[in-house]
Length: 76
Image (cartoon, rainbow, N blue to C red; front, side):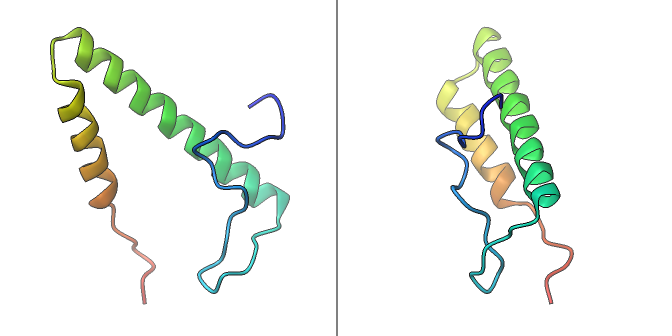
C-alpha cells in the first residue's frame, strides 16, 4: 500500500505466539507484502469465477476452506 495505514483486513500489529509485538521492520514488510499478494490473487479468483458464472458464495466458501486447510510445518 502507498501509505502506512493498514488495510481494514490487515492487523494493526503482528503478534508472536506468546502475544508480544513483532517489531522488525523487514518482517512486517514481508508479512504485509505477502498478504497483499494473497488478497490480489483471491480477488482475481473471485472476479474470474463470477464472470464464468460460478456462485460468489461458493467461491468465498472455497477460499475460506483453503485457508483453513493450510498446515503449519513448524508446529511443535
